[in-house]
Length: 172
Image (cartoon, rainbow, N blue to C red; front, side, top):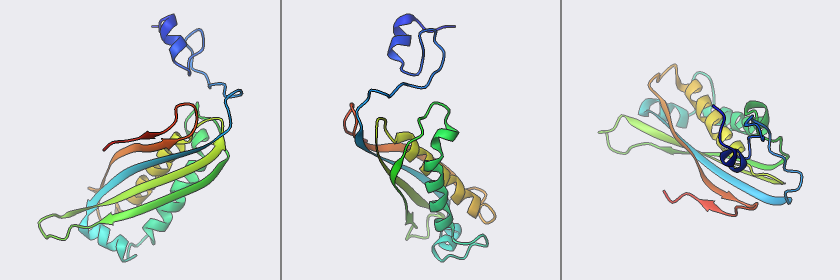
């Protein structure tokens, strides 16, 4: 079923016939743009302690996940069909380990955050989200031999600045 003419006009990734297309950003102003995304890896306290102590058989999980996230941000336009290739000016992928202090919980969380910047005609939200998703998947790959029950959750855009739509900050 083809979308209505009014719906096609409001969706920038559809042409006049309702076919997917890449948005023309030729005439959009060049501005400084920043996006921040976050995600979580829930895993056993054993696995999180092995990461913290750099004792995993595969090596330094956080270093490998950081590099994977950086590489993923740079390759977003190759992974997501309608994304524009961007000249990224800064990529930061960071981690916060949350290990429960009480023995009542057997799971911990690694909070993953990416902060991506560019100066260009379109935003970097997809690059930030891709960096987080791939960093989370890499952490899972690094710990799966000791914790197959690890889960990835809550990947989301938390902040975006620049461009016509201005600033967005997630409230929660």
